[in-house]
Amino acid sequence: MKPLEPWQVVSSREIYSAPPWIHLFRQTIRLSGGRVVDDYHKIQLLDFAVIVAQTTNGDILVERQYRHGLERVALMLPAGALHNGEDALAAAKRELLEETGYTSDDWNSLGKFTANANYGCGTMHLFTARGIQKISAINSDDLEEMEILFMPPDELFAAICKGEMPALSSAAAIALATHQEICRLQKISSSKA
Image 1 (cartoon, rainbow, N blue to C red):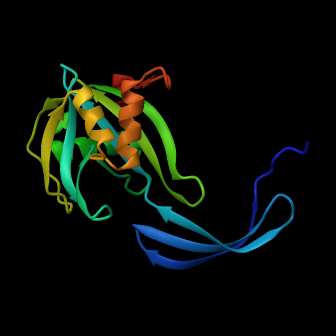
Image 2: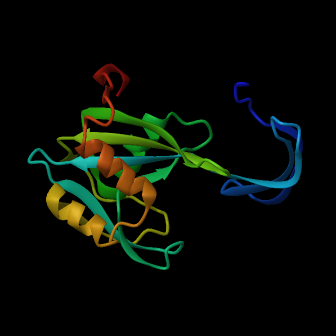
Image 3: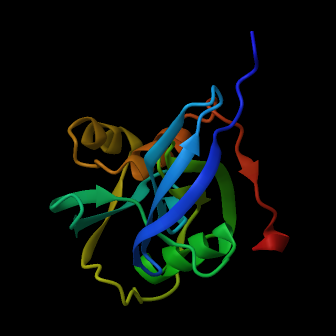
């Protein structure tokens, strides 16, 4: 059997752009078998970091907020876009502090994942921050009005099962952070902090 090969991009034309948030491309693609698809779409969104922030007693910091893409109030984890080539860990630390006023000296990477394998849509970088400590007031200038909650994992699992945390990035981060056998946590040294 012939090994699978990547598709070839014959041409790519940007058909919509709203920098830095979204770029939409219409591509002509040649499949590995030679067939040509002339209207494949690729979506380019910003990469982003998502943080599972836990207190010393294991409660997880959760934000309850309105999300317009969902058109409803939902539970979310602290998260935000990487800016202009920003390191994912630096973005995670910045977002946690800006959105919540909390910080941590104990960070672990849960990995990076593509939000949509067919169209791209940005890479999510997932992290844990354990033993969080409040060091400042919230300093978010985004469109974010939120309520900060602390939930024990079992209560959070129940909320996820009820559809109260519908964002894939948040649900995936919770699953990976609370089930360490899924992947090996990558300890980030404090010298990189």
